[in-house]
Length: 257
Ligand SMILES: C[S@@+](CC[C@H](N)C(=O)[O-])C[C@H]1O[C@@H](n2cnc3c(N)ncnc32)[C@H](O)[C@@H]1O
Image 1 (cartoon, rainbow, N blue to C red):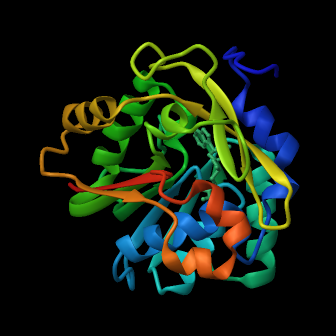
Image 2: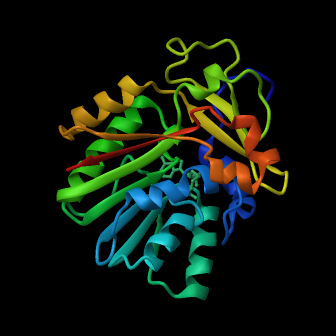
Image 3: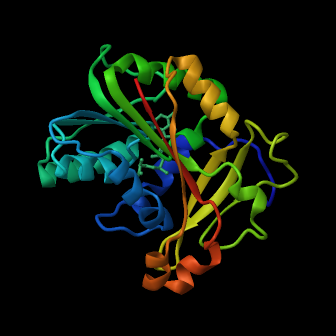
């Protein structure tokens, strides 16, 4: 894809083609350090909870929640290759996680099946309409009092970065923060070994996320965390984390049903 080209790239195909490169047991890509640990903390105590992991990929977050004592973990994922990878790891580890191929906009689960719905970097792959459908489905499958927690790239990141460079960027081409809504941007996120993974963002503003949640029935005040490089990251590896220090990298949003 050429620089600034925002023509749509098929997400399932992108992940089918790159599935093996996503497989990991240890933190590896930038967001394994700057987002996922914070997401796990924001899940609070998951012991005994029924959890759905939306856009679970090869199961990195599902495995972590299972190891933290979740009562059940169900992973839903678009890419058949990613599902297969998740299932083969489950076959080795035997954590009891159930993975299935599916779209987060149409969940096969009965109403009130889960206490926690987690979506780690999945809503950046869908447009506003599909995100709204998924939010309604999440509201339906959560029990009253259940929690919905998701993370996406920070909506402002790509527009305040000075250049498209490692370890994380999206190429917005000629799009602006508002004119770029619902356009798909290609990007890359780097691993600490210096290799890159291709990622996408269908750009949405904070208004899009919050009005989608409200329309789906989540009427309480969302808990919002703008995630960034910390002093601990810089101490670990200044060369890797330094270029994106002091930038708003990701946003985590938690609401109650
Ligand atoms: C960046 S990966 C994150 C995977 C996993 N959540 C993690 O944190 O490791 C995004 C995943 O979302 C999946 N995905 C994208 N759109 C989806 C959809 N509409 N329904 C289900 N999965 C989807 C992709 O195939 C990909 O595996």
